Amino acid sequence: MSATNKTEIADLGGGCFWCMEAVFERLPGVVSVTSGFAGGTTENPTYQQVCTETTGHAEVTEIEFDPAKISYSKLLEVFWQAHDPTTLNRQGADVGTSYRSIILYRDEKQKLLAEKSKLAAQADFHNPIVTEIVPLKKFYKAEDYHQEYYDNNSSQGYCRVVIAPKLEKLEKAKVIQTEPQTGKN
Image 1 (tube, rainbow, N blue to C red):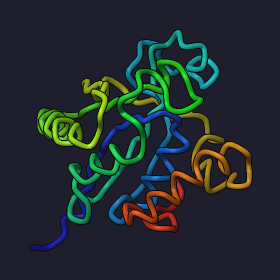
Image 2 (image 1 turned 120 degrees about the vertical axis):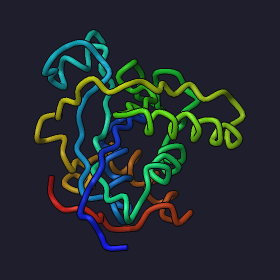
Image 3 (image 1 turned 180 degrees about the vertical axis):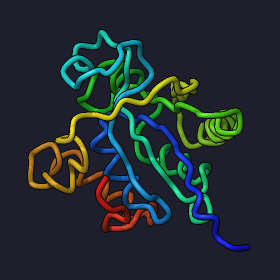
Image 4 (image 1 turned 60 degrees about the vertical axis):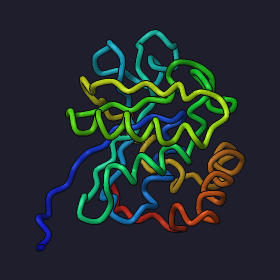
């Protein structure tokens, strides 16, 4: 079977998009990861607006991937390992609806795979998974300074204290690779 050069998109939110972006860009088969917002009602929201918790948006990553190299289901497996999907509207010290666990599906196939994956993942958690599975209405790209945040700011405090340990844990578990696999957004 020859490669078709066709890519697909997954839209996932598991707390801070800086964390999720750093995880997913280290997966072979991921072409690009873009930090942004989705799941709310405000059109073209800014980061400052989303931080007010009045837009309804969550911080999410739009993941372009090559399904010949990595499946949507595999992305979901990593998603469950990359955050705590049992905490409502928070990840660690990041609190609010903008940090909620959310899968935004683009079609019926993604919806069914997300629901199946959530059921399977529940076996790995003592508390119930609270992740929303909802249709994607629109993805809004975050400001440029949010893109590739960890790679451009790895010595910054949040990156050293929150993101680096998460990456180390996932690298040790052989979930992700050490270096980013994607190019610039």
